[in-house]
Length: 125
Image 1 (cartoon, rainbow, N blue to C red):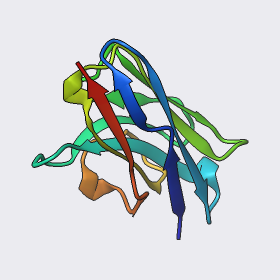
Image 2 (image 1 turned 30 degrees about the vertical axis):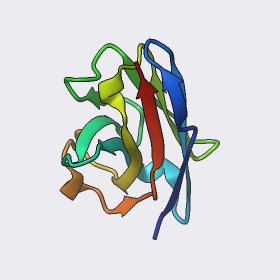
Image 3 (image 1 turned 180 degrees about the horizontal axis):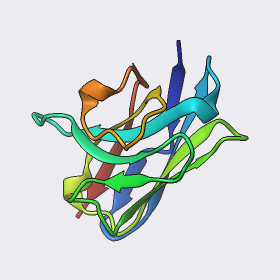
């Protein structure tokens, strides 16, 4: 079992930045691939970013590429999502997810086994 807890969400203006954190417990963090997904009102869950257990590979959804950066700190058992140039369409609940180590970054929700409760990000225009 893995317990994930997100933090860092809030209400911000368009064009600003925000950093989300996800802390993990219950298993060796360094053996977990991590990812961020988001779900807006009435929308399907969308892949945002993912990073392999080793940090050697990352992947991003097309709508956030060039604006968001995923990182991890295995010593702190944490993953981060640095979001810049935020847009109103980025408004969503952001969820952290994990799975056992893979060869490539998984980009679909079904590939992840454990999920956090989510943190709300609201971007005003």
